[in-house]
Amino acid sequence: MNLLDPIAWAIVLVLLGCALVVLEVFIPSGGLISFLATLTLVGGLVMAFRHDAATGLGFLVLTVIAVPTVVGLAFKYWPRTPMGRSFLGELAQEGDLVPEDPRRELVGRLGIAKSKMLPSGAVQIDGHTIDAISQGMAIEPGQAVVVVEVKGNRVMVRLADEQETGQASIGSEDLLSRPIEELGLESLDDPLG
Image 1 (cartoon, one colour):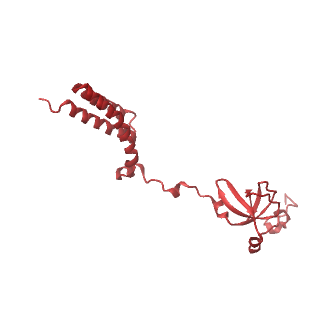
Image 2 (cartoon, helix red, strand yellow):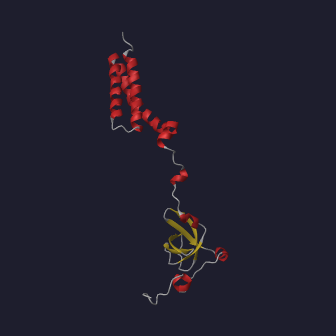
C-alpha cells in the first residue's frame, strides 16, 4: 500500500527543497535550513532515479534550473510582499540615497577669484573660500566668477559677464584689510590683560 508513487514523491521533495532554499536565503539559520534543503533535493532526485534513469536525469536538469530561478524570483518579489516589507522594513527611496550637499545652493552665485585659476584655484563666495575649477579659460585673481555646477566634490565656475557683475555687488574686500573691531575680535595688544 503505497501512498504516492516515486515521481509524486520526487515532485513534492524538489518543491519542498526549493522552498527551503528560499527560506535559507532570507532567514539566517547557520546552515540548518540549507542542510535540510540539500537533503530534500537529493531525496527528490533519488526518488526520480528510482522510477527511471531518464526521469531522474530530467529531474536533475529541472532542479539545476529551478533552484537558481526560484531564488532569483524570491529576491525580486519577496521584498514587495507584506511579509517581506515587515521583515526588511521600508525600501529606500531614490531621494534618500543622494546625500545632501549644501554646496549645491551655490549654483548661480557670484564670487571673486582669490588665486589664478589654471584651471583650478580658490574662489570666495559669500565670505567663504572654496576650491573651484574654471570652465575653460584661465581666470585672474580679483575677477568675478559665477558658479555653473556642483558635481561631487567639484565646484565649476566661469568668468562672469558685465550684466551679472552689475546685478550684484561683490565685496572684494579682504578679511585682513578690515578693522579688528568690525570682525568682533578683541585687541591683541596685551595678551595677558
